[in-house]
Image (cartoon, rainbow, N blue to C red):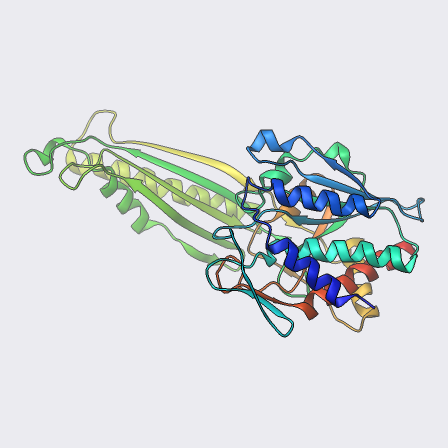
Length: 381
């Protein structure tokens, strides 16, 4: 039997440790000490200084009794979004939520608590199992920076599971590739009341481009968004500069490239049309579009062992786990790009990234059971 009260207590301790992105020092120290007390080996990589975090990623190694098997990896991230400082937990029966001033932090401290309980369960039951590698990443919430900077030479596992979604009946086996867009339009400043004809309105040009862009849900595989706009200095000055930030995501690399080019085309046509309308022959207005891959495509086939193993474990527990695609990126995208076949399992976290976040203890218990059954099923192979 899973020790429900111990799991609940561990979760409560974790969510009350402040750990916003880049300030994961305290939670990393707690996780390290907890696993070292369970006789696990803990390594901190050198990602911290590279990405400006108080801590690097933690790699926890748990020797197995089936040393003939390759290690199995499990992942959770240490950081939380804001507002996440001074979390006060309201417990109603076996449901945990914050007091409404902050997030709860179940994303992803429920995953950490689940893995701690799994190790305790393994040890108390003296259960035969394969070697395990737990990877606790930093700065996941602000761009997957910990996973991107992880020293993958420290890992031996070739497949694993990230505990970082809501539903406990889904296996997230697909996630989009994403391009981040940084758009800069350079115009020319002038007094808006005295001589506006001498100015080039960068915000107007950007607005014309935005009006022509297809944004939102493009099709069942592709989305696009412009989320940030910064420009102008005063209401009586023609704005000479505007910067926009956005993204395109798709499960199809061709569609990703095509829609990125659609946005580029809208911008170029808006600049060209402004020049023609105002009979401008010089270098201004000018346009710059920087496209950066935010994270790579994740596409694990249903026939892969990492999916089959989770489904068999679910079946043994009387559950049906369904492989699905997600619209978001996670550390799993990065692990897959480094040759570690990784799918995402749910912990029961709900309304994440909001002050209405909550989780039921029963869902965490169910995920501990699933993790244990995956380990047991793999270890019997």
